[in-house]
Amino acid sequence: MAKTNPGRFFEDYRVGQVLTHAVPRTVSGGERALYHALYPARHALYSSDAFARSCGLAASPLDDLAAFHIVFGKTVPDVSLNAVANLGYAEGRWRLPVMAGDTLNSVSEVIGLKENSNGKTGVVYVRTRGLNQRGETVMDYVRWVMVRKNDLDAPAPEAVVPELAKVVGPETLAVPEGLDFSGYDFALAGEPHRLGDYAVGEVIDHVDGVTIEEAEHMIATRLWQNTAKVHFDATFREDGKRLIYGGHVISMARALSFNGLANAQMIVGLNGGAHANPCFAGTTVKAWSEVLDTAETSAPGVGAIRLRLVATSDGSVGQLKDAGGKYLPGVLLDLDYWALIPV
Image (cartoon, rainbow, N blue to C red; front, top):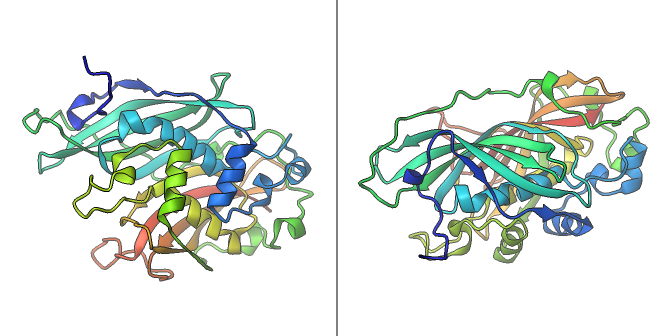
């Protein structure tokens, strides 16, 4: 019997199947340091224990997207090892902060399947939960992935496409226990802008750009233990290029958004997301955001802001799709999320 794992192919999935992912990982300050080295991340709540304590937390948590990458990376060998592309996200919620010393593991359930018309690939929908050492859900989300078939003659399964909420209701967002922005230090955070300074429909050009390099991408995918072949093996694609992990683009764009959204401190909801076009080494990523909505929370001094974060390869601002509704070729990422911000 073969000892190696070739990964699952589309015909290996069944709706209702539960996948328990290896290997649990205990996080430390090392993950924070590496995350901040890979991305120009400067949000104060994730940079300073003292700042986090002044906002009512026991210490600075692990960056929300670093926690996402760890939870996501665990799922790759079982969900997307043979993926062509990760297509989208929905119904994401960060439910508990991840602190140094926590141990994370991931569990996914297959909630949908649909074979593509070419008969060579299909789309797999999974709902993933990230759990800590106490069995508490720290985050959960849905994603869908295009996966290759191994046996092209395998019959297509009955198509099941789950109905997913277009927006995570602001009333369902989890605000960390004790979070209090009533004494928020805007000077230390880096910008004076609070929730009331942003208007729905406002577009913010984050100005800065970062050129993606192979070396940093390889470090990132190894750090998050993302073993998808398209990210490592240059022979896996016909063009001979390694595809940049979409999460790498998400984190880069989020870090760039600090310039203009320094006080959008914590991501707590993921309404939707699409990796609109592939990203390769040598691409210069820039970003812009659109304010989609605002909401109140029950925590003192804490509001919620819904943002569309767009990463581009051509530096365009405010342009997303063509007249036919197709993403423009310069759009790399379209991410719709909720963040906590002082009122």
